[in-house]
Amino acid sequence: MKLRFAVTALACAVLSLVSVSAFADSIKTDYDHHANFANYHTYSWGTVRVSNELNADRIKRSIDTLLQQKGWKEVASGGQVTIMATDNIHSEQEAETYYNGMGGGWGMGWGWGGWGMPGGGFGEETTSTTEVRSAHVVIDMFDPSTKSLLWRGVSRGELSNNSNNNRKHLHEDILKMFKDFPPKAQG
Image (cartoon, rainbow, N blue to C red):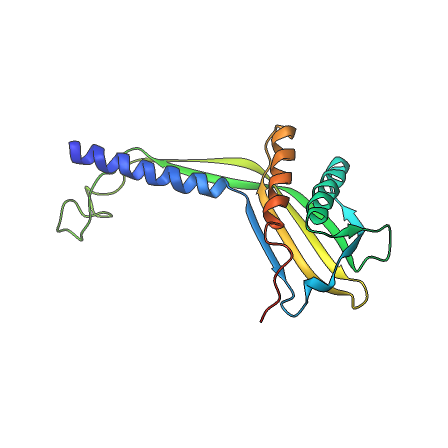
């Protein structure tokens, strides 16, 4: 009985860790490995198309602050780099299944119960489905003279019903995107 409780507790702990990491925002960046970012020092804003107009200003302010800390300067037009931003907010279905007992064991009729065999198995399961609002934010940097994409940052995460949390996560995601910006020249 103690072994069964220990196995159940361990399984719950592992599932908890996996579910926590699934809720973390996903940040990805990529860039043109042939571009020499040391040659770029000014930027201008292009189109910022977001579903919440308040986020347009938040995105611009966060990026302006980070780039200026890295020695870049914003110019009204004609910058060496043009920055564009978009977002996509949508709902996704998320299913969670819970099992109320481990039942059975491993093996095909040998061992201690044989999962999937009569008398074995996981016990009853309950699945619930919920709507989860998610957001994707994409920040692109283009070289306007060549019209080529230089750098892209993508953030994907869940939205909460608390606008303060969403605003905080947006800023944190932008910080993570620009953590290693500008990319170092490939040698």
